Image (cartoon, rainbow, N blue to C red):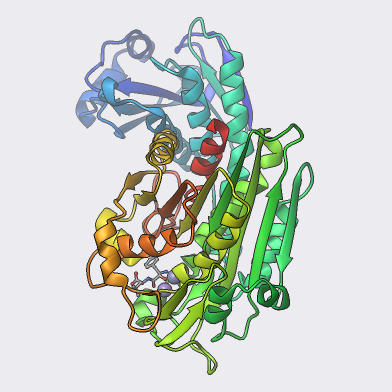
Length: 492
Ligand code: BES
Ligand code: MN
Ligand code: ZN
């Protein structure tokens, strides 16, 4: 997609689809009046008939039938001007992209006059347009490639392009393939995305310009004493993998960050088997790992002066004849032991290995992403991820980044008192708590393995997978986390 900037007025742009953002109840602004004049008052009539007042997300599509150089107009409400943020632009662009697809538009012109942070808005618009175009169609016999949007023109009278705007657009363009990679890995059927496949995909997509990948097989995993990963893998015919992706910047790194992603390629629950309905979407259970691979794969294009290491422990969780049993005890490389009372609480078992291993390298920050608990979905619903941290400034920073990327996070507490609920009769702790606060008890278990390094845990069980198509993503894997991780890395 070619992106152009033009200093021009709204009634002079020749395009298939002219997109005009309209603030709530601000229907007398010059661009809208100019268009209405050009259309001899018919636009205003349509707006009245359709009751369009610019409420956030409301739209009005109007065919100009040759009365203006633009074939179609699309008015999109941006709602209350005080509430406009980056994500307003992202959603607006995603909406515009879907309308462009419906009318077969090959180019789009967008009236670009954000009241604040035009650079963030421009980046968000490019993200929204691209993210909304994603399709995963390879298993449909009648699939056609999505119609291509060839160009986007951002215009307004007196518009100047600025270095900040260009940079923000470039960053967006460098980021998006990482989101698409994560979505693809999640959307592939679980018998395609095996641990071995995740390893080869990491090798394929993370290489060159400072990036390197090691994929450890079962022998090396045994030698490294990754006991949680081995325990979960016991019920499977597939071998586990432990993926380590390293990024070394060309300049001396200012900071060291570890990213850890849960890579359960299919979660049947193991011997503590899930009911059939709950298994339907359990290919999503490697979404944290996919986000780490997706984010790492873009680092060569983003030039951050930080060393980043990605860790993805990966296996499926199946109830084969040799499967781990409720009552088994795992001894971890940091000496701690966990009694496994429910084999469906497997994410924490494999993340414990990865966190303990990552902590040994003493990074400045550790961030893990995991589709860890149904309880987090109960608490926050399908669109919001849970954020836990032992370091409030890290949590604040991630919250700020998530606000900008529109990947919604909400902080939940690490309630020390609930450690009581994890007491085991035979080991240091058991792998499940009581019947309440399941997202918190899971996070408390992870905390035992981070060795007091500033750490954040993102429980993305809800937002990793869209059960109903959302604005910037069709049903399926969302790639949640990739953009927030990269945003975070740009700010440390
Ligand atoms: N992968 C699941 C969590 C999950 C559930 C993710 C729904 C996405 C959607 C995780 O491994 C799991 O099974 N958690 C159990 C923990 C319980 C046994 C303590 C859960 O949430 O029920
Ligand atoms: Mn599980
Ligand atoms: Zn799981």
